Image (tube, rainbow over all chains, first blue to last red; front, side):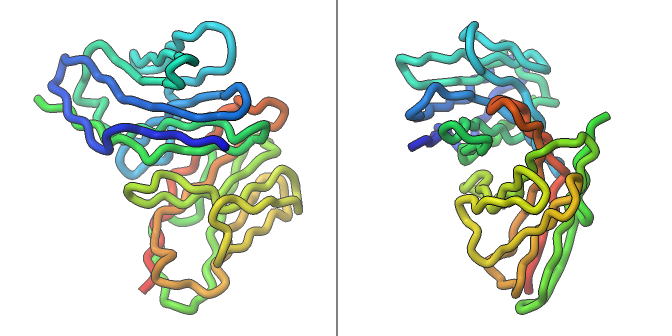
Length: 113
Length: 114
C-alpha cells in the first residue's frame, strides 16, 4: 500500500536560512512523487515532481528535491528562505498504477524576519 | 491560462440541507477529483471521475455523491449535510494517459454546516 509521511507539521526558519521539509513514502510500485504548495486562501500549485531519470529535481521558486530510493525519501529544500515562501507544503505519491494521489498531512512553513 | 473554478469560495448551510458544489475546468481534462482538506489530515480523496458519467469512490465517499454530465463539469453533492462535513473542499483535474500528469487545483470552497 502507498503512504506518505511528512515529518513536522510546522517548520520555522529565518529569512535567508536553508529550508528543509521532509517527506518519506512507501510504494509497492515505482512511485511518482510530487510537492505542492498552498498559499493562504488558494488552491494547490505544483512545485516539482519526480517521475524517472535524474533523482535531483528542480522546481519553481528555487525549490528542489532529491529522490532517494534507499531511504524512501523525497525531501524538499531551498538554499535561502524568502518571506514569500510562507505557505503550506504537501508531498504526494501516486497510488499504485492509478491516477490517484495520496497526500501527506502537510507542513506549514513560517519564515521569520 | 489554465483554470479550475469552483462555484463558491464560502458556503454556509444548515444540517440536513442538500448541498451542491460545482467545479468547472477549461483544459479539456479527462480526469477530475474532489478532495476534502482538514487541518492535520491533509487532502483526502472523496471521488474521482475519469470520463463523463464515470466515477470511482475515493477514500472517504460516505455521505457524498458526484455527478459528471459534461466533460468540463464535476459536481459534489451532500445529500443531507451534517456538521462533520464542515471542511474545505478542493476540486482538481488532470489529463489522462500518464500517472505523473500534474493535477490542477481550484481555489477551494470552505463549507460550514450549522
